[in-house]
Image (cartoon, rainbow, N blue to C red; front, side, top):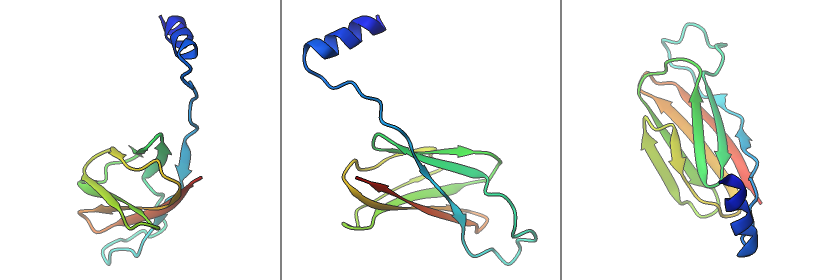
Length: 113
């Protein structure tokens, strides 16, 4: 069936390409005053794939808000406790921020060409 779908896409002139994920390197923001170990590893990985920011949690972080901002247009997207967030496919630089209810902040950027 996959072969027939690929053949159909080729027959109708559709471009069947897999987009490579764009890694979003996260840094930890200012530590909460109660954070006893500021050198803790970041418990989240983040990638952008085909208009979607995707998180993977490596440890329990409690409730959190994921936000993405297009740094050129100011357009913003956000979700509470969501591991995926649909965003834009437009070229530009994007700022990602994750804020936990415990007061931890993680942030990073990615660029689309």
